[in-house]
Image 1 (cartoon, rainbow, N blue to C red):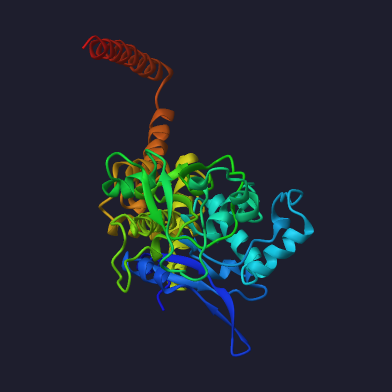
Image 2: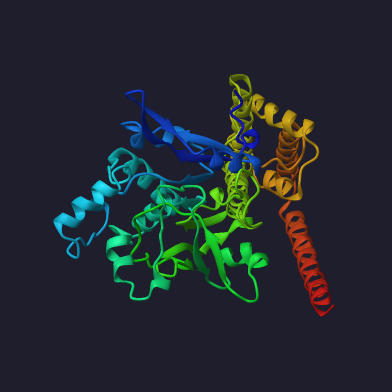
Length: 424
C-alpha cells in the first residue's frame, strides 16, 4: 500500500450507529450518505461505534473531512440542559414515546464530540446532519431542547406555527415547511426552486430534539414555522474552494426524494454534499502541499554517508576561508576533494548557491587549485623577503616611497570613479 499522501483519495470519517439485530449489535451508516460522498469524489471511512475508539482516532489519519449524521439523543450532561420546565412525569412520557431515540449512547457521544472538536481545532471540513448538527452546536457551547413537542409545539398559540418534526408512520415521505434565510449557503443552493420571491421549501426531518441556544459562532440558515433553527453555519469557516466548511442541517436533504425514485425534490438537495466534498478535496490539497514542504528528504545509508562527507568538505573549506589558509593540516587537504568533486559535477547552481559557496571558501570549482594558489603566494612572499633583505636602506626607502605614491594615486583615481558612478 502506498504511503504517498498525494495518491490517497480524500477521506471523510463517518461514525456508525448501533442497532440490535438477531440479539446482536450491528453497526451501520445510511447508504444515502455514502453514495453522495463517493459520487462527488471522496472516500467514506466508517468509524465503528465500539468502546475505546475515541482514544484511537489518531489511527484514522489523515482526516480530510467529518460527516456526522443521525443517532440517539446526546447525553444532556454534555451541555447546560434545562429540565425545570418539564416535570418528571413529562420526562418519563418523552422516553416512552421516543424509546428508540432517548437511549443515550455515551460511546458514540465521546467519539463524535472528539471528532467535532478536532475539526474545530484544525479547521477540518465538518457537516452535521440531524443529530450531527445538534452535536456541533453542543461542541461549541450551545444547548438543546429536551423535547420539541413539550417545549415548543405545546406553546404555539397559532395552529399555523405548529410543526410535526417527525412522523413514525411516514419516515421517508414526511415533509414540513422551513423558511430559508437570505444570503446564506442554503439560499444559494435552493434559490432556483424558490417561487415568487418566497423563501419557503419543504424538508424531510425526523427528530424530537433541536437547537435551543445557538452557539455564538454560528449564523442561522433556516427556521421552521415554530421558530426552531433548521440549519446553521459558521460564515468565518465557510469557503469550500479554500477547504473551509463548518455547517449543521437539522433536516435530511439526502432523503428528500420523489416517491419510488432517486430523483431529488429540488435540484439543490445534493448541493450540501457537493460543496462539502469540494471543501474536503481542497483541504486535502492544502495538507499535501504542507507535507511536501515540511517533509525532509529521506536518504539511504550510502547517500547519507556521501552527504556527510560533502558537508565535512565544505566545513573545512569554510575554515580555510576564514583563516586565509593558515594552519591547514595537510592530512585534511584530501577531505576537500569530496567537495571539489561535488562542485565539479554540479555545475548548474543558482546565483544564491554560488554566492553561498563562495562565502564558505569554495570560490572556485576545484578546491585543490585554491590551495595550490595559496602555496604559490606563500612562496612569492618568501622570495620577496629574501630579495629585500639583500637591498640597501636607500633602495628600500625608494621602494617604500614608490609604493606609497602609487597608493595615493590609486586612492585618488578610485575616489573619482566612485563619484562618477554616484552622479550617474
